[in-house]
Image 1 (tube, rainbow, N blue to C red):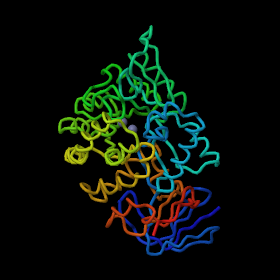
Image 2: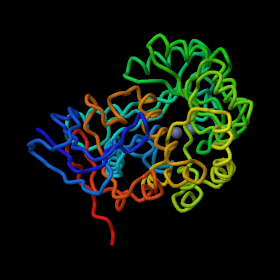
Image 3: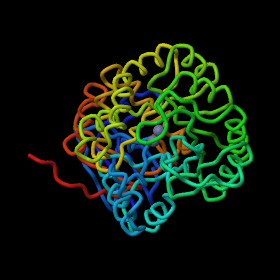
Image 4: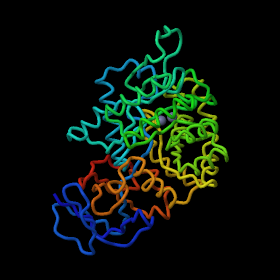
Amino acid sequence: MRTVIENGTLFDTESLSFTGEAALVIEDGLIIDIVPKAPAADLKIDARGQYVMPGFIDAHIHLRLATMDFRKLSQWSEVEFGLHMARLATETLQRGFTTVRDLGGDVEGIIRAIRSGVLEGPRITRAGRMISQTGGHGDAEGGARPVPDCACQMRHTAFGIVADGVDAVRKAARHNLRDGSDFLKIHVSGGVATPSDPLDCTQYTADEIAAVVAEARNRRTYVAAHAYTPEAIALAVEEGVHSIEHGNLIDRAAAEAMTRKGAVMVPTLATYEAMFEFGAALGLPAVNREKNKAVYDAGLASLEIARAAGVTLGFGTDLIGETQSRQNREFAIRAEVEPARDILRALYQVNAKLCRLEGKVGTLKPGAFGDVVIARQNPLENIHALAEPETALSHVLKGGKPVARPAAET
Ligand code: ZN
Ligand code: ZN
């Protein structure tokens, strides 16, 4: 099947600019050509006066965290998870995100359902289960539990693996890589949504982090780490972690360490805003809302610190469950401190690499997937508009096929 998008102004990801009117030719799912005059096609889309861009990439989502009411996460059947995750996946695609990087939780079934065609959803690169220490950000258990006999005993859920010690984290890493993880995810500092870890605690030792990094490198991939504090960020990048997720409490020294090591930071500011606004109504406990306030307040400053030190930034959201509808808010929040070009660099160039899909996503070059969004306004002039995808985008295509989207409210 051939799809042609004609008369639109095309975005060039390398130069981060619009290069003029042309026809984009997509055949059997892949972009095959950019030509001045549209050839015959099975489907023609007239994009006159509009801006044709690669599909968006979100470098930090969790399809498994399908509700903010965490009691449900431990009560739902796999069928309920499947249905909720499927809806999140479809809506993500409708908002223009044709590729996502899932930072933790078992999403293998959803990936297979999308590939088979039974479900409409984005392309998914995933970490698999998050690896966390006992009492860390991946450990949702609290209260009296029997102490395991052996230090290498792992606890294992659909969300994460709790593993302590070099041998145990190695085993957790290998399990994930065997099960299809495209990269690995560890937690090296406290987190907002868990019960037993203060934000400023450091999780895992240098030896444990190094062991996971070695396993990732052996599989020619990398480690992403959830981290807020300067200590945790510096420790992680020193041991070879490639991407720092969130980074809200970063300081100048930690930012410089990241630049020195060539590490990437993926800010996820939309989630703190959403938890701040909707957390209480959606069942997020008070203790977690308090932790959220601390990282929400530090969010924009962390961007400025990272930018001043020359840290490479990705683009993520980390929205939980019901709040994933706020995904496109990240464009507007980032625009408070970043020029549009820098946001698009993060969204396309940096995120495509983080997804390990460089050349396949985030670009309109021949050989890439035919994943396209068509914007009514020039995002370089008004990137805020992308925060409202229903009105900002006239079309979303994945593999050259238009994605059905709900009509914008008028
Ligand atoms: Zn996190
Ligand atoms: Zn996350």
